[in-house]
Image 1 (cartoon, rainbow, N blue to C red):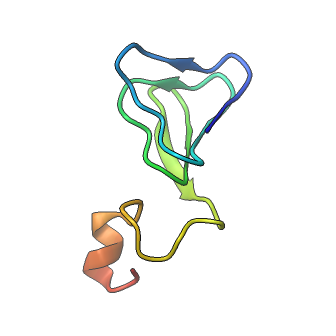
Image 2: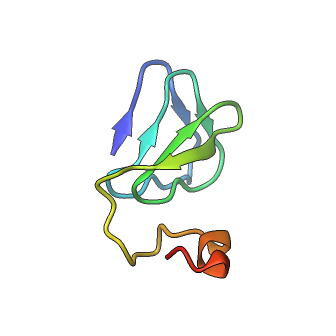
Image 3: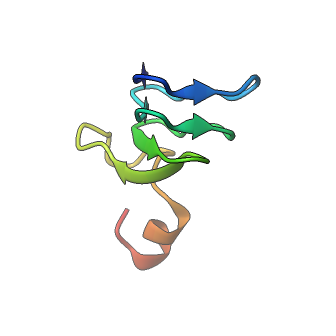
Length: 68
């Protein structure tokens, strides 16, 4: 996990394995593994390239499109 400069993770929020919370972001909900979150509130902007292929990090919309 990587929490960058001035990022805030609220109490009770879990940051997944190999996830990243960007600078000045505020994580208000759980951060999924292998995802990069930025903004206020923090939202996923991408999946890291080192993510395993068929893991929980694959989003529902990607599964629906058949891109898992």
